[in-house]
Length: 331
Image (cartoon, rainbow, N blue to C red; front, side, top):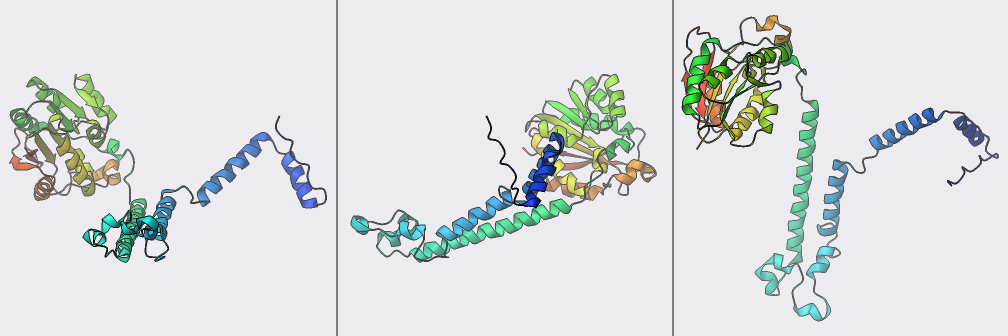
């Protein structure tokens, strides 16, 4: 049986009154108060956090092995042979090279090296703290804003994109994002390929699904993260490249290159710099933080991402102001 609580100290009126007050509280109130107290201790105490453990680790390293206590560290004890082993080098003398074997060891040299290691850890800690601070202050887009942006179909770009992907794919599944209502997917399927679509707008994706296309309702970055490296035979990107900010396009291209097979094609269809006509008239246009970039910028991004053979494609019937660039994953 659990031990009974000790009786309140009657000689201390404040303690007795406190005990009576606590006894009158319900179990639910006590549990809520205990949880709040626990959360406050967790929030205020740094023990166990990554920053606390990291700081403690290299502080211990510096105190034990660094130059803070010359001649009185564990490193000094390991370097200094004693007793019958006085004629043999210490356990760590091998770190000093030929000088230790020749009997001319200099423990201070190794202490200085360990001091540099400790300082390197301190610089690393400062850099990690700076990165974390910038990430915490970084602006983030509004969740779900892509659902409010109007989906623009490829129209006259379907035929040239389909022809390029089918002609240059080494085999494997082809992926299109944002696929819209799936016109390119159906054209690729008619050409004998397995085509997969990615579309974040559920209502638009539903129309593609109703016409027999395989479509995932998600952002393309989520789908690419689940793809194995080198597993796709080709990728077409449209729509999504005009919604994402520039700093998000770079990792998108990097991941796209990773999931493409060797020499597999990538096609990018983008609005001219300045965005699609009338885009700012929609709520999605106001909430999205991305904007279109020039074709020359796309050439630079594709080259920096490691793609080769960057070329321009020409639209078919119903040509509009959008441009398309084709590239290939390196061999």
